[in-house]
Amino acid sequence: MAQEDEDSALALYIHWPYCLAKCPYCDFNSRKIPDSCDQDLWAKAYIKEIDYYAEKMSPQRVTSVYFGGGTPSLMKETTVASVLSHVAKVWSVDEACEITLEANPSATDKEKLMAFRAAGVNRLSLGVQSLRDEALHFLGRIHDAATARRAIGWAVGIFPRYSFDLMYAYQGQTLDVWEEELKEALSFDPQHLSLYQLTIESNTPFYKRAQQEELTASEEVSAALYEHTNEAMALAGLPAYEISNYATAGQESRHNLAYWRYLPYIGIGPGAHGRPIIGGQRYATENSSAPQEWMAQVFERGHGQTVFESIDLGTMKQEAVIMGLRLAEGINKNRWLRLFGLPLHDFLRKDVAAVLIEQKFAFDDKTAFTLTDEGRQRLDAIIPRLLPSTAAYL
Image (cartoon, rainbow, N blue to C red):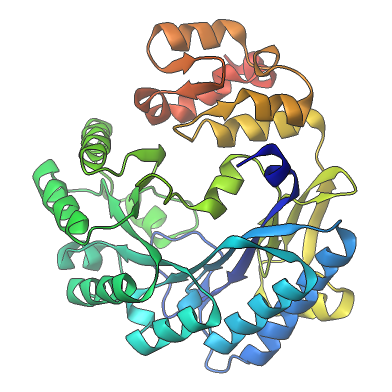
């Protein structure tokens, strides 16, 4: 993306908080959908919060809209169409705007996906998680493998771009089993896959269960699975462009790239986070997580924010490093200089960077500072050592 394009680009995230059932590993802001859900009211609330930002911000060019959740495929297509129509009224929408909607195989059908496509969605993100019935049962999913395969087939036939998620590195999974599942996933000829290792998050049923039994693979097995995944995907023509995301050239998620490249984005809906730039200042925003509380606040004051704080320069630099080093492209030095007015290496700890390069965990050239595959595998350990403000903890 050229400099002039980046300077006016805006990513928009719309959060839908409802699911048919809450998965035991999930710590996202989601809950079971109530028996009564007034989607016309939801559309009005989304639109009202969009108007709040449109009035506060300078003219923007929307490059991506992402309906996340929760399970946004539980939304009515008219809700999605209303939001997209209003976005086009208050902002300029890029001709190549990526409009993604998350769907679960258990919460959609072919006709509904066709309706979402007609409403303007041009990219589907399908929450498959596994193509094996035993794994789906373990993960607490309410669809089976046959339903997942059918949903992938619909996505292939309806959307110009699509992706689906798989989860791995759970207890008992072997390299042979994962290898076969990856082969099946690749048989659909996808252009993008998101492949996540199972992690145990606090405040989830899996967290409580993990106190009594092992739910994830050992560190050694997890590392072997990760390395095999990267190798297999690269051979298939979908190299890793981020720690858990793989795509053919040009099919990367533009919306997620906005996060990782530290471009501005707005979070709309309950629990949504944002990093908008208003009046030249970047802000951190966070909305009330409870759906009804968020909606009441929106109709009362135009937004559901519980946090609206300016971000100081040091924090912005830290966030840009944390996000940028997730990417295979690394941190672009020209972009960094434009954002912060000083070279990247005047911020990073030079001694740590030198060791990382020597140990083949990073490489450095004129355009970018980048972690290797081995470095990104150790990102959580590298970040605290590389950032100057955390030097006291070394």
